[in-house]
Image (cartoon, rainbow over all chains, first blue to last red; front, side):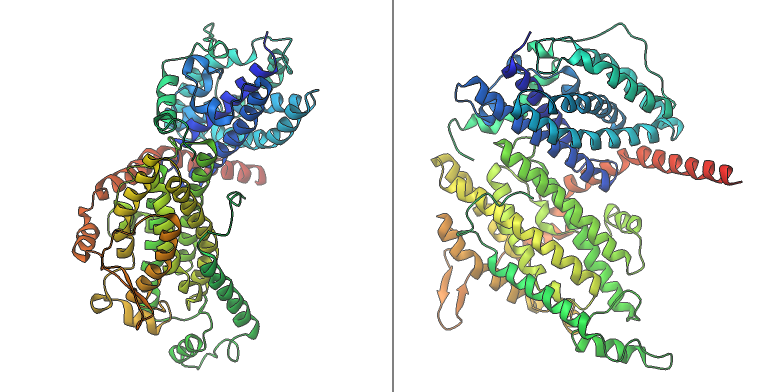
Length: 241
Length: 355
């Protein structure tokens, strides 16, 4: 059971780590237009992260702002889901990650927009429009790659197989949270199934459901991601930028 | 929209932005007054008409006849400008993952994204001259067309991101503001849009340096070090001295170019001196001093031999930048092929339905 601080922190960390990964694509995307699109999505995630982390800092009341939370916590203190910290892999893996993340964030932010906490409601109302675009973008690419060439089909199916186990963690029940993630599962499943069907892809049957991100027990990847993200900020304690 | 959240008082670029707006007004005014007697008749001398339009400070448009050399010069110049935007994403992109605050990360990410947008916009302008973007990208990847040599220098610290914004974008704007009045319409219009965005970038870069220069001792040293490394390469961005410049005279006559390399370089130096004073940083030139009779600053010229070496491929990062671009292009090939195959299948399905 988690309170509003942990809830805002978890969502903020999801968005921040997703932004950090998506931004790694800058100058590397398969098309110039896609470079711009991925940067756009990274900027949306970063914007949501800043709002959520700022609010988490206020709820905590210990004087930590968005930067203190982003740059001065270690990986064991991060509360993001494992899905977002997984390496980008090839473009298919990135699109599988984005599809699942957006299909989770869209119903989540939509539900948040109607919750009792006014600040979270405002953040949800803003972010859900962005998530709808992210979902649309990822769906388009998953369909193209799934139903494109033989190679792209093979890569897209492999990506779905690789990333799918990490979606279960997103929906672990938490009845006390402002939005109980378990209530979002049906919406997620319906959206994802429709896209995968059209893309001629199959959803893997797998009992493996890695988790631990919400408790600060991450994959080996997160520590490297944070080491890079935090290096400059930490090298100059107390400096303004 | 981002980046208006700091004071405008110290910020540079105001005067240049004014010039962009004046060029935009002139463009509108020229369009409103229409061209001499409309399009030329079938019996008219096309070359004479072209010269008349250029002399009257009006715009050549894609449908117009133009000398082949004019077309080629423009394709080369616009393409190299587009390539520079695309390659120029790399040195700054190098710091996105390590930006020292979330706000700076957002600003930098948006800036690098703007560069990609400028690249696309410029490729589209070049395409109006009868060449495809794919062909131009190929010319970049096989090394037959160049990009601005400044991007062959490394970004070693966060302050380099500030220095690129202030100096490199500043030099680019000084170069590009006159291009807002270029005789070729699509290029002139592209430049107006690009210059407006670049002036925001320049302010952001300046603001990064301003914060560093007024921060801790280490931050100030970082800012000075960046200025020390980027000053002369930025001066070299204006190209070789007028005595050695090969393309200038013809481009001047065609009103593609309106000021000489040395005139623009002087304008840039004069602009930077006061800004460096406000920053509290020292331009690394002991010969820099006001010349009362010229009403301009005397300064040390950049090392043009170094510029030639970097243009020829021997800068610190030439190989790295090209390798990075080639790899992104090659790694993305299967994705582009998939998109094309998917689109072809959709067309096929539509045709089946229609039949």
